[in-house]
Length: 316
Image 1 (tube, rainbow, N blue to C red):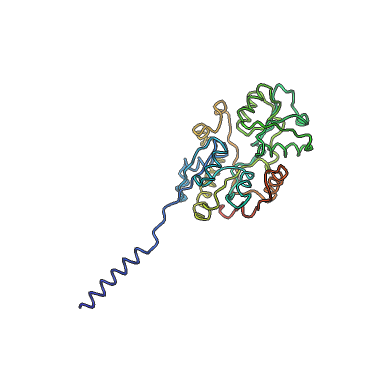
Image 2: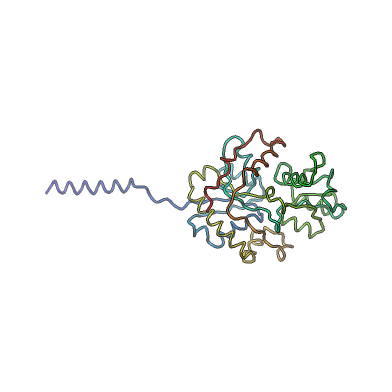
């Protein structure tokens, strides 16, 4: 009898030990996404609004940021996990080692929804793209704005010597200088380009025929992807569902434009959301073209590997 009691005590103790050693269920990870107030972000806000992240088993915290440097600082400090940015930004992060990975397109221009426009001042008298040869065009240098400017003009036969840019980093300054006529031309993203045109600026060329240049992407820190691959899959599954809903019924999500201040107030009643891309990532050709431009501009010390910087393995 004593031996039986001892055995029962041993069994109970062993059971408690096994329970204490057993892996505990992990909490649903929280993905922190740093977002500028750009139209590219509408599907992410839509997924949050419609409860799609919860539906797919992931928590998402959106961190609004006012400027790209602030966004990059949060990523560098590990205070944000993901962001909407451009391939050029990813290349700069990955110039020494893989810090970020692109997991999806965010926005991509279409025939009906250009993303970037080269506009001229109504006071400049310039109405055709050929008239831009040798004319200074306001851009934010070293960014997708300058890249798109170069590529759009090159597509029209411009030589490097005929393309002149002027550093005007702030979009608000570009708009004001265009309106006053102090700047003859400037490259602008939509919807601010639409506002500038409403105020008199002239669209001489846009990227509606060149989707390979003016796109944005969704990127995550490589460390976050490696630690939470299922969360990334869930995020992208929810985003895919949200994208389909926004494309099918954009009017349903018009509130996001005003609530998140993504569209200037004068455009709220007239602006139409673009058609957002479904699951996909930049191609090797697109990556290489941006990289070559950055190498030519001496913005990169060496090539950055596509295969470690872009992945489609988490797409639904």
